[in-house]
Image (tube, rainbow, N blue to C red):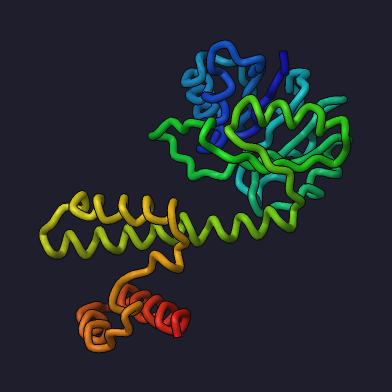
Length: 255
């Protein structure tokens, strides 16, 4: 039974804790650590009253310590913690593994490629995990752990993972912001955002079968300058700038 401590109380930490505590897994979540007492207690209750602490000196002995906090907070949160012979990994996409070298002998990365929210439980069996370990000792533990949680596991180095994270920002974060802008335009027209969902679903479904480049449609793809100019003129501020930039990118890509 692999004993695990989760450091952090955010969205990724929450989803990891819920996945780890699924019945019949050979994993045991022995403790949660957070810096805010009320928030950490609430997190503990959500996970079935897992023991928790806000004291860095009260970490329980564990086989694996999962640090799941904001990228720029990793060093600060880990400062002063003692991991003994335990293995320490972070869950960040764009942070080099070597950041952990001053905190533990065995260190690495467990990066689950997915968008996480508190409001929706994630099915880890559909996620690819990208792992990295500084030695064979950790690798022998991290691989089975990742395979237990996730549907697919890949070993990549920090440079490759940083490129992957950058691609994910385009595919997920930027795309979601475009949905936000589309929602604003629908509200201005007095229409529900749900009317766009069949279009969004078909767009995503299509790229399961053909490349995004082949799937591209729309006035910029057709190089219909009259439509592009008319739509651009109907927009204001940042939305207009986004429309112009995206149209130019598409236009030039297919030139």
